[in-house]
Image (cartoon, rainbow, N blue to C red):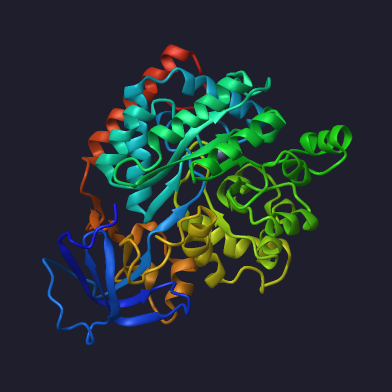
Length: 462
Ligand SMILES: [Zn+2]
């Protein structure tokens, strides 16, 4: 919902406002004025002194950023069994995930989704894309409503046998499911929910399904995403069977255009990075998941090359049982440091670029840069205030360097989404966090008991 007739909020005397505006202005002693859902003014506190508001929030001692954008984050299942899997599970990981997920009830999924969203919001992520793995979207809509987040959802579909225990639909059924999810959820909750086409991966979908999903998304004026992890096996199959690389294969299938966001985007060469940019497709890379999964991010993930070619690149964290963490700021940190190390070149992905990936460029990668990703008049008031009166922020001379390299989500003090305060003084205002954590713990234990899935810690637990 876009409204400038709601209650007014003024956040005053902010130590630094990192606007991410086109000029990338950083305002000291700044103020931001909100009317309803939208930012109406941004400037020096002294220049906006004459403006009064229904609510005034003291921003002194705070660094303000736009809400972070997480372009690939499975919100619905991992929290029930988080940390269960050993870190060397490898290819056995996903079949276990989907077995557990298939056994979850709607009530399980509501609770785990709400807990994931609570964690995301608490650490400054206000917009995220759930890549199609929520089963009970109708029930989870209540979690999105209660939390007041901005979310992109969809329905994973595939029409080819796969080793992941994912159900195989007919091509027609898979397309119908895609269209139903888009028509039911795109624009829901006054526009806070978007719905996209979400074929799972090119490997598990026919060319007909890939192209039909992309056409359905374009017809509905929305977008599509798929997992583009490109295992050596899939790259080899593309070469042998189709005589091309995975990116060229997507293009042949009619699935590489301005409405496509490629998740992970690993296993590509420089020429493929150029092709992705040329076709206007976007990429969302998940460094937190890549490093834990041993994916060789700096070698197989051509983030600097994608940026150099002009592609819109955003960041994700993947599932809370894959990377095991959801904090977009940690992906921002990794984007800033990984390539410096991997390429032994400190000019790789400067802190400023890394912050862009988590805000304005990340918003562009989801087709939302007109609405979010920067602190400017006319945009949605999705804002994060970091309390710099904490040890990790001292001493403060360059707020971008301090945010990217030495701060993390623990200092997030206040979060607004669409003009509404969602986190206040480090606490979510929409849920009893401790109660929810306890509920998800017992739901997780119950889920393991009824599925018989069990992994023991390596060390004796006595
Ligand atoms: Zn994923």
